Amino acid sequence: MTEALSRPRITVPLVMANKGSGKRLSMITAYDATFARIVDESGVDMILVGDSVGSVVQGVANTIPVTLEEMEYHVKLVSRANPRALVIGDLPFGSYQVNTEQAVRSAIRLVKAGAAAVKLEGGVTMFDTIAAISRVDIPVMGHIGLTPQSYHRMGGHRVQGRIDGREAGGRERLLEDAHSVEQSGAFAVVIEGVPRDLAKEITNKVSIPTIGIGAGPDCDGQVLVLHDILGLTQNTLKFTRKYADIRTTSVEACKQFVDEVRNGSWPDDDHSFH
Ligand code: KIV
Image (cartoon, rainbow, N blue to C red; front, side, top):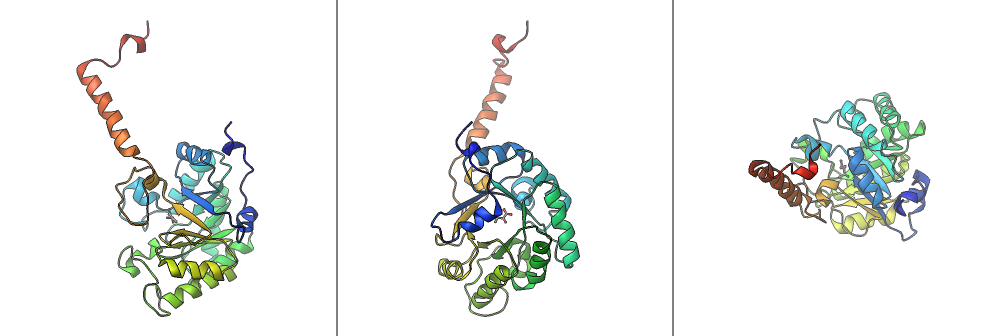
């Protein structure tokens, strides 16, 4: 067994204890058991079963069509890998915005499917929702800044906090959002797509770990989408990084198989039964 797979199981209190410790937290998305095992073997702290499953697995343009049933299914697949990392299930659009009762019911479904915590998008408007879910002992990770479920309000996936103001997406509003998420009882908060100096200011002001994506290096941790890390997507967004080119390797492997079938060299005698 590798060192990573024998490490202590990561829990919510362990994640919270990292704040101010100088140790940076890492989080990677996964959507099925095979990739969850690979990600866990890297020693990552948290696995996010993100609603990014919509764009990277289901082939839709944004996260809005993803359903709770689909998220439940992917959380089940990931938790079957029994990772040492903390598994966080993303609440999809429409599963928590109606009222707090709906939000608690949805969060319970993801926990029953195997998540140890849930994530939801929004700041001041989600105060009661985060508090209600936390009250039934389901840890909540907040998500502020470029919140993909606000696609239509933002007019696409747009960097937030570049303009001053208390309107949604304004700089002062984002500071209020961060404060509200912290006060409502969330154990951590994702900051996505905001200027570096704003993410730093938020990180310095809140007592819970901040996990950045497109928010510069000063957050308490960082998250990336697995398919971007592996180079499986053709994403050229400024804030992602391709650490491998699995797409090219995969196309080449499949092409070699197709060529060998066509020229009759696969299967050879060694791979045939006698
Ligand atoms: O759904 C997702 O993968 C996310 C991360 C990018 C933070 O929300």
